[in-house]
Length: 82
Image 1 (spheres, rainbow, N blue to C red):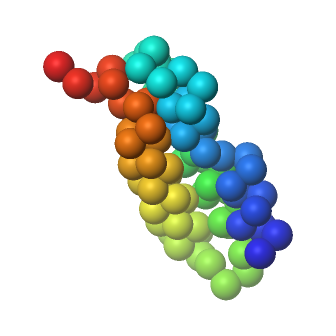
Image 2: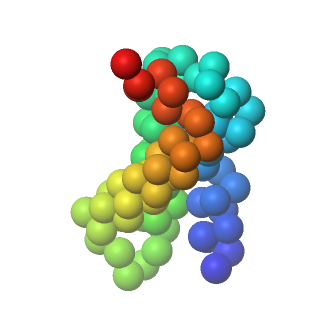
C-alpha cells in the first residue's frame, strides 16, 4: 500500500497539469507529463517482487492511461482538440 501511495504522489502529472493550468496546457507539457507518468509508474511498479519487467511496464502503462483519462476530463487535453 505504501508503494501505491508513492506512485500516486510522484506521478499524476497529467492530472496536476489539468488542475493547475486547465485549458492552457501546451502540447510539450502534455507529452512530458505523460512520459514522466510512464517512467515513474513503471519504476515504482518494478519494485514489487511479484512483477516481472514486462509486468511493471504494463502496470505503468495502465496507470498512465488512467491518469491521462482523468487529466483530459479535467481539461488538460484541450490542446488536442481541433
